[in-house]
Length: 161
Image (cartoon, rainbow, N blue to C red; front, side, top):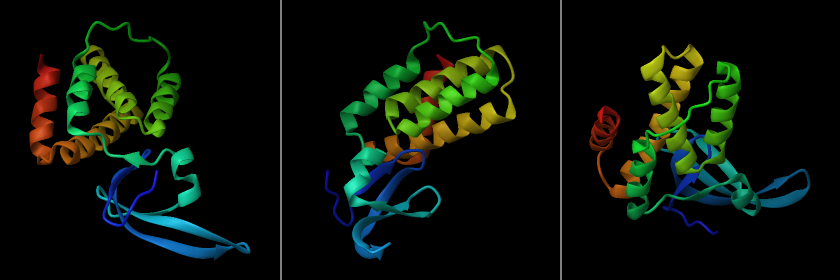
């Protein structure tokens, strides 16, 4: 998948960014080309080797139709949540977030929301909840061309059902 300057792309675990440039550099005696990706959420700049972009999981932002599928994942309630220890759950959720899949991120957010209704989340779980929510809200807002507060309002509606 080739990205051009100005394209929006998702970098797993960091979220939506804009491709600000394509640079070629000499590293350890070999010439490599990189995407210069600026993450929207925090302004961080990431250099992604163009040859490894697919393997790393860099991808296009989902399209508008997929947003409804994500909302469907978030609305699922008939689940048998794993009653494993918090640290095992944490590792599992972290692995899902690192895949960069919006569906996996939505599952993490949904599961933690459901868990939050049963008990207080640990500090790590609250932090992961916030991370998953931030990643998802940003991508859904970009995909739909809506302001983030509107997406957050929709998530509140889904979670209040």
